[in-house]
Amino acid sequence: MPYDSIRHEAKSVVVEISRRETDFLYDPSATARVIRALRWEKGNFCPRCKTTAVKRINTFFVNELFQCSACNYNFNCTSGTIFQGSKLPLNRHLLLLMASDLFCQTWSIRDIAIIGGVSERTAKLQIEKRGQPPQNHYLHGPYLSEVRRDDCSSMLDLFERNAFSVDMPLFLDRLRNWLRM
Ligand SMILES: [Zn+2]
Image 1 (cartoon, rainbow, N blue to C red):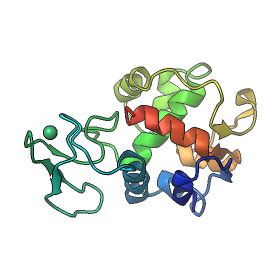
Image 2 (cartoon, protein in one colour; image 1 turned 90 degrees about the vertical axis):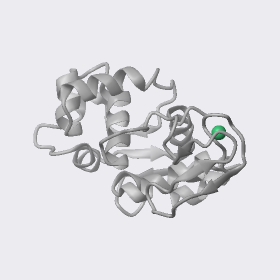
Image 3 (tube, helix red, strand yellow; image 1 turned 135 degrees about the horizontal axis):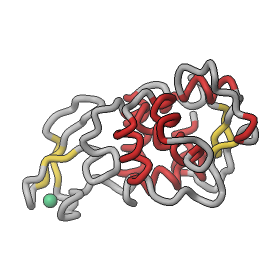
Image 4 (spheres, rainbow, N blue to C red; image 1 turned 180 degrees about the horizontal axis):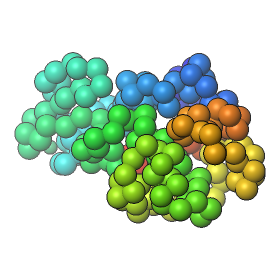
């Protein structure tokens, strides 16, 4: 599976967007697993004071909670990242950021909001927060002018119908940006 290759980034792995290959776009607990693997790659640390003296205070799968022994801050894998405090399921939040990277030059904010299933206000905020898209794009697909979206009900639907794929090493670099790493 793609996220198992996180520790072997030298590999160039381009995978099609599908439930089998990119489950982290379909299932919020799979998104959390990828985020945790990246963020805690070198062990857990407190996002506030950076100490590694932290203890787990619950084991709830998606929002696994830790407490810092130095400053008492309670945190999970999204604390201090672009995903902190999001009301959206993690996979949909990630898809919204990817849609923003891909279409911010060619689509209106309204269009991005519709395909992301969020309000225009949320779309605008995420477009602003997501930072400059990378030069080498992590999504491979048709030319943007050829992307068919009229009947697409969601970003995943659009990715699937237009046969998009993800360059995993580039994608993980982008995700690191969003995790403020
Ligand atoms: Zn701390």
